[in-house]
Length: 198
Image (cartoon, rainbow, N blue to C red; front, side, top):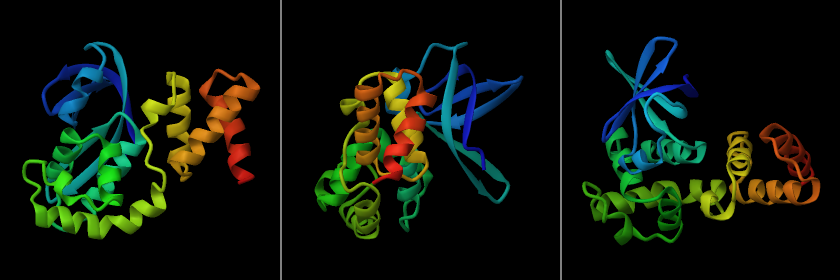
């Protein structure tokens, strides 16, 4: 499994990017709504990836954060929803709104996505509601609650280890407030000590 790709952004299109890693160009499908968040071409970028291998085709799908990738993987687990529709959902609706819609059983909101009808939205909610209750009991948008790239990266690193979003945010905030740490590595190490005591 390719967990992430780090390299030079060489091409940006509406639904994919190409990243040069040591002279090899990786084509990665992305959400259309993240184009404005990407750096300029020839700049370094990290994309968290999900590999789909079917028959003779291998496709990489990329995300700017591990939580967006997590939502994508959960959407894929719903019968009748493939990678293209999952990306369409995340392109049309911010990931935190997808979480809220599922937890609030708001099929009308989800069905606004082109290609995702009311019946499929209801099935999505039915199959993901219990998963989301365990994974995201406190749906929060990291970018609205964490200021600064180091803090955001620290939260995402902790979440990739299996901790809940709200717990990670609270731990990171506590570390930054009390210890005045700046580097991601130090913030994560101190936050893990707090999380281990929960």
